[in-house]
Length: 591
Image 1 (tube, rainbow, N blue to C red):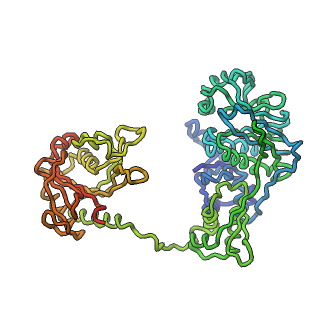
Image 2: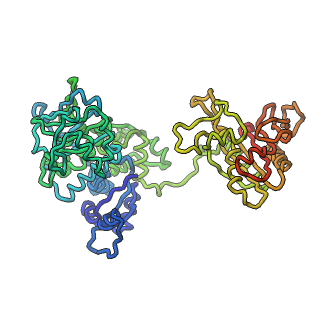
Image 3: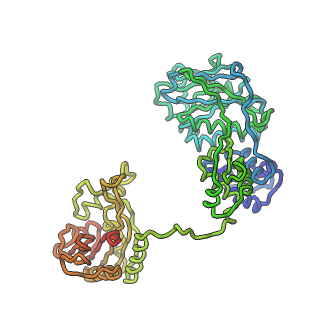
């Protein structure tokens, strides 16, 4: 989950009171976040430079590192975090965000050219009028952009944010896609004019920006935003222009978000403007921008409207397991920044208005979760759900595990993935291409297929422990995967039981007796060949076992397993010097 670093003193000032570390940890826990670390700004800088702080000073600013949920983008800066905690504490009501009443004629416009559809088709914009920056607010403003770029923007691949001093620009704006040699401007923190293709080469040595170049560098056209006088605002998603850089003196901020995902672009824009509209002259008011597409369609951004969701009280109380009245639930939701009220007189449905800051609320279950958080997870009585019953297969597996352990065998857990060679060639088996599920683009040759047998893993275990005192008696109850055209995913899991004996002699009689004991415990009698009321064994001819020293286990007319003495050639493949006997059978056949 993302971690937000905020100055303790500034945070406490925003919260209107001071806390001890223990009190603040409790507040974070109750709200559903976590105080991850307490450090200082100096310590963070020294850590980045791999230096040690020999003499910590009392004057160093204390930094709280707070872990927040990955889908709570509104908590990625001090402004959003402090607001949420004040509302949670009942110190403040939920703000109503509004779009400034600007006529279409006087509204700023962004014209989108057709060529942008080739590389980065969407753009959304907004203006923060009359904003007041100081150094701390400015740093928080920049830091929020970085946090969003790393989180929902997926390192600028989905969305890239550009912020500009509107007073240095002249609308309307155009969003275009041009060949790199035709784009010229002075990038941020530079004094020299660059062509876009030159800029790609220049930033290949930049530690921060080089990781974003791959997004557009192979494209024939690069996205670029111009104002009315053809001044470049930005080359998204790489760099803004130095001409429109914001400073502490900036009063009007133009925000543009270019994207390949329009939904995420809207969320990012809303997050930026709602967090910092609190510093505008008209608090929580944002000036809209009209985005006009090349096909003539137009949209006005940002969309700060609330959407309504009706949630049954029974769903909330039933899911949490606590009897709550409507008034209690609405009060709890209001503490979590959700406007809530009873749908109607005598109605047990709750009408929830979701503000633009809460893009994480998608379903009634999200509303229910917020009620549970506000109520307090520690206050919810523990109870065992009647629906939580173990699956019959798992019950049987546990019973068999216990019985085999009582027979002196130790349980092992081996990898579910293995190599093709281990699964087939090293067991003297042929790959018929219709059994094993193959892993696409495996990271290692050791993990190429999903195992079709427990045998390779167990033999590898013995091979890596051949110096262990003998005898070695191990077993495993685990799943294998077999291709199955009848299943919608093309494969099915099967629960198998395997046991292996390795010692001075083969121990074939011990494995045979283990099979008889398992069958006895399950309640299956040994019967004559051809009798389908129980089980019997027949001679088999599998290449991984010695001929004449192996048998199939027939249960109710079908083969469910095999046991025998492992071929010396197979043992040699796994670097095992001692004889081994092995059994493997299908557990699901007994259900």
